[in-house]
Length: 213
Image 1: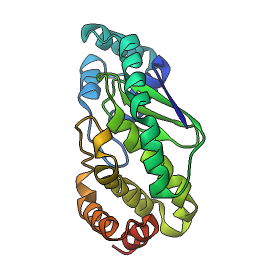
Image 2: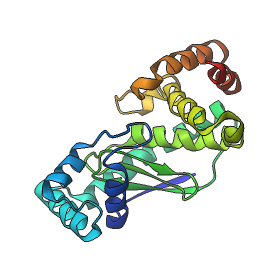
Image 3: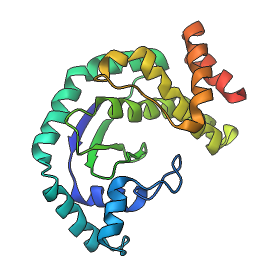
């Protein structure tokens, strides 16, 4: 698996428009950048207006996107091999895809397994924790994605998000001092998964227990 960090203005704009005002796990919760966009214009679906805002926001905050992109890539490359080995051991599979990590000012980091990308913050020089969180979803999909119709999309989403608690056990030393906190609504499920993993070290067992939790 190769992850390439890239800034693409159109992808940044799309992320801000589509996810800044809320997401599946944070319904109606606006990010600070989206609130700033609303203060700038009420035409939040107007791509040209949003483009004006994005460029102004980057300029006013003195974001050097070229340097940030380089730093993100360098920091990721340092730990990527270790992360892959650990993820492959946990899930029992490897992912050979080329995946793009797009920088965004949005403050929210969606992903697409089908289109092989995820987002990271354009405001930080190290996004290893975010990258591992999003890639954990990729591994989860490759391992359990064929069960989604049986499990149901809502339950699948809950378990998928809760499974990232395992990063705090298996990859904590790679996360640049950060902790994968998860969403408030998944805390009980995260504890169940964490406890099960600590006892069994078996991802299938953790998934099975989470299904009935």
